[in-house]
Length: 164
Image (cartoon, rainbow, N blue to C red; front, side, top):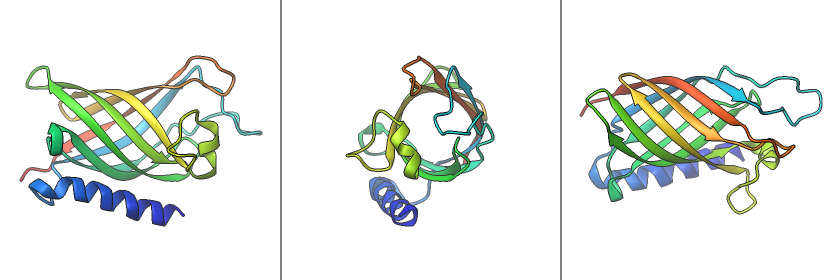
């Protein structure tokens, strides 16, 4: 199922990006996360996986002046998750940009722990705010845990312009 999902996500993102070129503009490399006030929901799970390496390719300022991304990362349940996202970014200075991102991440069976999935599928819908500073990024994903407590996921990583 994850292979089919990854292929579909890649096709959707590539279709959105092809209008202005096939090569991505930017590479995001997620590295780590911090779960604030979030209790792991699986029995026997006492902590989250906070090491989240991955590769995410982004096509910037495409259709509708939005950014489109596709990739995969090691999720908080220690499984590989294909994902795609759509975002809008604004340059605050030459070194800083701020954005809003909607990510669609395949969590497999663990998607049952999310309040919002796409049509009851394994794709969790994750809204986030993102800050890019030079070659670093931080994403803040508001997330209530399964007990109804307010919490958030903070994701950190590196980003590189691929140049065209």
